[in-house]
Image 1: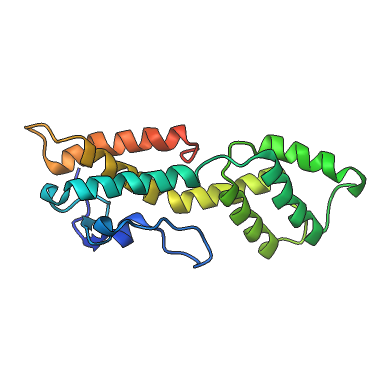
Image 2 (image 1 turned 90 degrees about the vertical axis):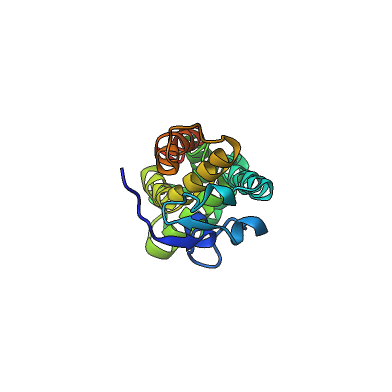
Length: 192
C-alpha cells in the first residue's frame, strides 16, 4: 500500500479547516511545526521527540473532550432553541415530551456536534427536523472530522509505540497505527 507522498504542515493534516465559528483542535506548538505526509504519517521518525509525543497526547485529549457525550439537558436546550425558530410538524402542547424523546434517541452524541447539526438544519430547513434528519446532519459533521481525529490518534500511537525492526514507517503507520486509531474512533462513536 503506497500512501500519498505530499508533505504538509501538521495544521493541514490534523486540524479541520472549516467555518471559523466551528470547533477546531488547537495544535500544541511542537505539532504545529511538524512536517507530515498528507495522510498524517510523520515524514521522519526522528521528528517524534518527547515534546512531540506530549503534544500528540494533548491533541488527543482535546479530541476526547470534544467527543464527550451531551447531557439530556444540553440536547433539550439545543433542540428547544431550534423548535422556537422552525415550524413544527408536532402539536406543541407536548413539546417538552417530544424534546425528551429526541434527547433519549440522540444520547451519546457530543453537544458541540448536536449544536453544529442544529445550526446546519436551522439554515437549510423550514421545519423542525425528525430524529433521522438530525442523525443525518450529525453523520455529516462526523464525516468531516473523522480523518483529522483518526490522524491525530494515530500520530499519538506512533509516538508512544516504537516501530519494531523489519517494519517500514509506512507499514507501521498503515497496519498498526491506523488500525489502533480506527478502533479508538469506533469506541467513541465517530465511525458509525
